[in-house]
Length: 217
Image (cartoon, rainbow, N blue to C red; front, top):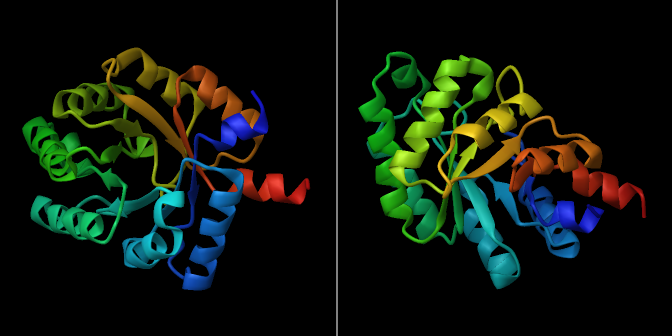
């Protein structure tokens, strides 16, 4: 794959707590220049980013981030607010504790409720693979499929580890045919990006690939 083909699958990401508008504007500029799939930014910047980039760039934001344990009502409010501010894509964090308690109805119905709020906008479901057993990862493939979400996503990038090749391969084996895969967290080279895509990822959450491309110019 060419670098351009890989960059077209990247959600160019800046979610650091101390991010400023100048930095967010900078990654929007880079995303437009290198034609990434989207930028993934904090909810508080969505409105300004959409006004700044217009239709030149898809704006993705995060919900229930990074821990996932806010209530469904809170996540729904965040989602509707983000969409009203111009978000094109929503990356939500599941309630990991509910999954571990095997409260599968709770996990499934929360995803379903957020997808209903998103309508034709993309919903990606972050399951934080580094905190889960293989059995729990497989169960989440099933629940994400049943709930009608668009993507299953490996990681927030804020926990103990990020995406692994093994987890993306596992997802590809167990998600339904309508569910796509996003690998995120720790993707640090174009070789890594290409390997994740070859294993089944349609999106890559990273800030490093654009930085590498800029440095090579």
